Amino acid sequence: MVNQTLQSVEDKMKASVRVFREDLATIRTGHASPALVEHVKVEYAGVPTPLNQLAGISAPEAGLLVIQPWDKSSIGNIEKAILKSELGLNPSNDGNIIRISIPPLSEERRQELIKVVHKRIEERRITVRNLRHDVINELKKLEKDKEISQDEHKRAQDQLQKLTDIFMFDIEQLGKDKEKELMEV
Image 1: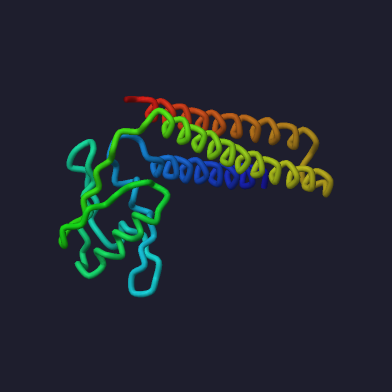
Image 2 (image 1 turned 120 degrees about the vertical axis):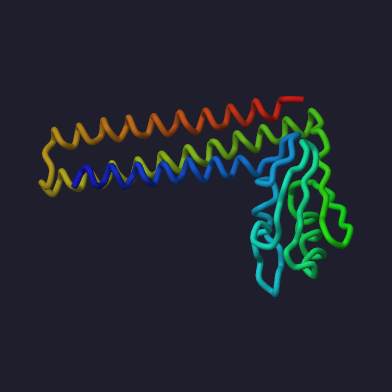
């Protein structure tokens, strides 16, 4: 029972770190990356649809993104969605494809993005701590109901803390890597 609980929380923590990694990929750096725009929601046939489901996205060079819609009629909606997004990008449309030039970041913008990274790191830490808290409460309940012994409870809590520390370290490392990437000129 304890092992199942710990395995379940480990899976949830892994998922949380994976989502965090994907989230960080959407923060713009000076380099073009398809991950930057692939989750932008585009109004298509009356339904908000992620851009990566409507078009091929590539980065042929470091400062350029190319978006090739599969349905040419959606090109205007894609352009509007990118303009409305908080990415601060200006797409240019030639009727067939959309090109987005990724300008270098100003020092001020870099600092703003670093603050965003720190905010997201803290949000993810809170998520992991909440998962740990839920398991601690579950373990207390199991001990109170005499389903596990005091020793099992203590061992499980130690294992839980080790798991939490591992995932907190991963979150910190991902954040530091993103910060380093943002500071590259």
